Amino acid sequence: MRVFLASLTVCLALQAQTVRVRPAPYLAYPSPIVDGNSPGLWVDGRLKVYTSTGELIKMSGPDLFSLWNDLPPEVDSPAHFPMWIESLWRDPSDGLVYAWYHHEPGGYCPGKGLTVPRIGALLSRDGGDTFEDLGIVLSSGDPPDCNAQNRFFAGGHGDFSVVYDQGDGCFYFVFDNYGGPASTQGVSLARLAYEDRATPAGHVWKHYQGAWDQPGVGGRSTPVLPVRTAWEKSNTDAFWGPSVSWNSYLERYVILLNRACCQPGWPQEGIYLAISADLSDPASWSAPVKILTPRDIGFAPGYYPQLVGKAVGETDSLTSQGSRLFVKGISRWELFFEDPPPPTVDPEADPKR
Image 1 (cartoon, rainbow, N blue to C red):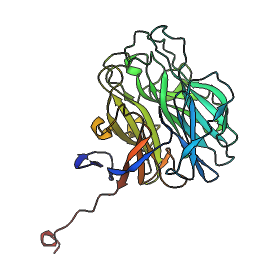
Image 2 (image 1 turned 30 degrees about the horizontal axis):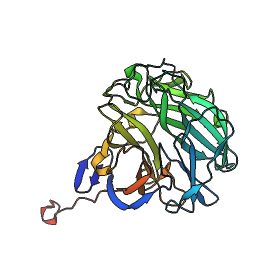
Image 3 (image 1 turned 120 degrees about the vertical axis):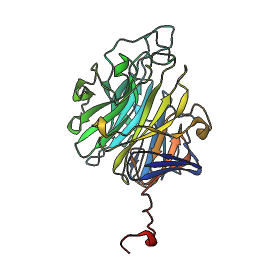
Image 4 (image 1 turned 120 degrees about the horizontal axis):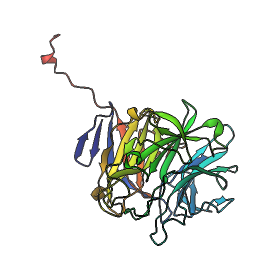
């Protein structure tokens, strides 16, 4: 596969298609601050999009291009605030909405401003206006490193996506592990069976050394994309913040990633794309390739890339041949997949003539 960005062509050994990053009319979410993935869902013909600043924000409208700020969703307990909703899924069988959040608890490393994020689950019975907190489902068992130099985290799990795989009936968590031994840090996987969706605590299992047998709370994990330089170092070099969608045109998962490198403060080195036929199989993931540089993005920090489908029914978790590419809630690009043109044959050179 090849990427086309302006006049730049990069050859990628991903699959038979090409992908073009091409300019598109300016589009921005009405929320002035976007601090994470901004998941969406369709309810009664309307699109609802959520984003977070630690406080929850909801936008709604008839389509992606006509959103406005709506009343924020309510959660029945403040126990896991500050809270960032990162992924959503609406059950087509009963309309219940499941959501998953990144939580940054206090009380770690006094005086250093470091936290240890965790991942929890929510349930809505009214289309995403109010939620019940189902508790924490993913957390690290490694002790916090209060000497970490990344300025944000002393370890923990967070900055993630959740997608439902109809093929095997599991929800897949693609998350970041920020602590523990360097060999375990990086973009990692966990999963939850469909039948456990309403009671997820204790039923999420991490992928570790080829098996799905480590508990979500406290268990070990093996990264699909290991760090190059550990998160506790001041010059960390790592992919983070995966945004994952099922692409109906490719019939593959498309994963967008940030890359922090190689100074304190998580400077954005670029936005990357990877493709997977099967999220549960690390061998099916392509090597990430850069599709936008900081200069292409044009503003800093250029975090939180997200692919969002434009058609009715499409969202950040279901995309198609041509979808909008957002960075921190702003879209000036479209990602367009296509088959390469067939090779031309010179009839004069055809040995069959």
